[in-house]
Image (tube, rainbow, N blue to C red):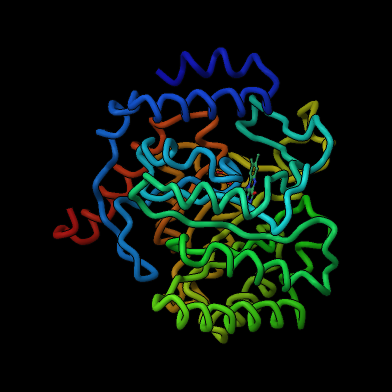
Length: 347
Ligand SMILES: Cc1cc2nc3c(=O)[nH]c(=O)nc-3n(C[C@H](O)[C@H](O)[C@H](O)COP(=O)(O)O)c2cc1C
């Protein structure tokens, strides 16, 4: 069914196709027309970060930046949905065009730049939640906020969403907000992790519940840098790590007409970088912090590869554009089969 829709959607400008398909999906959900997809949600529970995930395959951040569509996306077979990145204030993002499909390479380049309606809008949406699965909320900083004041933006968003998120993802890895990736290193990173952890403790007391926090990192780091990040996350006792965001590399897409477009590259070309990052993390963390693997999952084997590299859950974005809901089901079934082969009781 998706292959028919895809033929039409791929004739349109990528951002128009994005808006159109999400609007249609949202309308279908409100009219209760998504039942056929719902029945396909694979049941293969995973317990992680104190949460129960129906299956291991999630929708990655960026598809539903404002929480406008998660009730519908949640019915596409996903075990969890991450909305955002949301920033304290609304912001338009970069000028269009800012989203490019590299069809031959099964890839996407985007420089959206955190276009979003602000955390108040997202909050109004998540307060009306019908979706009963696991909901992650991914937070970031406004473009106009300086690096020195970035922590304030994260704390503002964390406080706003804390009571409504099953987990919060801290995005310090988008390549499209100038300076954002610098937050992953050195004293700035440590100050950020410390500040967010302190706020989490206060909020846990205030609301009488502990909401886990995962940090989302980039694929463009040396192994030593990845290990450095892992050390800090262990030091501050973070509950999860999401690896990875898009890459600034153009390896594998040199021949595309879009290869010179600025932005983050996702889909098949980021797969190996992301898997390599997960392997380094997994070797270093030794199970202390769970890994959510994302980047270039275009088929069921790619999903299994992420789990074998050390991820406990996976997410996808570009694969959903190219493969639709069928990919979600295939990936969840493949991970289920893998778990059963490792531990026969896990079926
Ligand atoms: C159009 C687009 C927008 C994205 N926006 C965000 C975002 O707002 N926040 C974020 O953490 N990641 C964002 N991402 C990154 C994805 O969540 C994911 O980490 C990355 O695309 C790699 O996965 P994939 O190869 O399955 O797409 C975006 C990706 C794309 C393609």
